[in-house]
Length: 420
Image: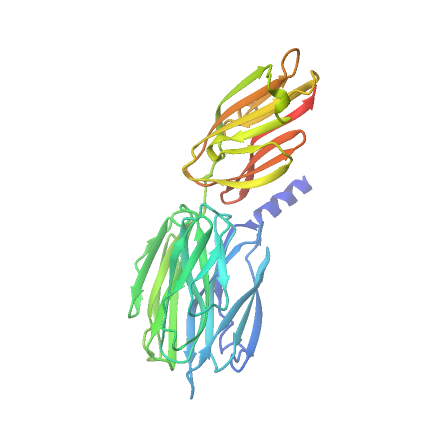
């Protein structure tokens, strides 16, 4: 009983989402004098423990850059590491004093989200990045840190998004821009059901956003512009009284308001599995005497839709296109003797359990039978299918990787060549 209670308490401690402000990067914090090469690191604790390393999004919600005598002001922000319980940031001010760079952070354990962080970007060229999930459909660019020596404009945009890569463009007045750090947030279609941008040239109070259970409100910004190189003050304060949330965008101390574009997001913590494994809806077995068997390999698998044949030991990862919604597979086995059998398992029903979940079949070599053929047809969703094919001397295995909130691997087809 004690062990059960302990396991229950540990399970309760696992989180999948966390967020908070971090205000210590400001002049009011003892020892924070951010100028002339000053560097400080901070380890920030999560409210509890994640089961997997979370993705981390950084949003500078309050920036106070005011120069005296020179208008060169730079904040460099790096993510040094992320663990299950905390993350570590490093802030650097190479030149003149920066008063504050307060951040809001979001940590999310969701395999459908990928965050690319560029701590020190090339200010002129667009940049292309490989992505992990071929089913990524949305990309959000977000400014993380900056540096300038006069009036400036930063405007990030997603130029291209494919199943293998994302390209970010910087439409900026780079004449006075010294440094830029940004993030790209990549997701599948259903993760952020609400994405909306609001451009502003003066301070404002946002509309009220009403959140459903297990939904979370987030903000980032992709554009910032100021014509005053001596003073840059910008902040965004959130007010949350569940189930509603709003924010106020402003400046202070007679500083001019920097023109900006805020991206408002609602993250939906999933309740359902969106990506499902391919299901075999028909399987046909043919056992016969093949007069041409001497000319054929010991076994062979053909996937017709991609016109590929596998008959040697090895493994290969492939991605089936979104348009592939029907998959035809043929497995051939040449019986070396009468004491062999073919055992096959095919995924049949994702929503079923036990014996109803798979086809579980045995076929025997005997008498005049010298070959066994398995013809299987699968239904597939209209998305990219990541599959791993592994061939050994006595088996064929097809595994599909499913990137839902957590990554799972589902056996689609398993064929073993066994002794009876």
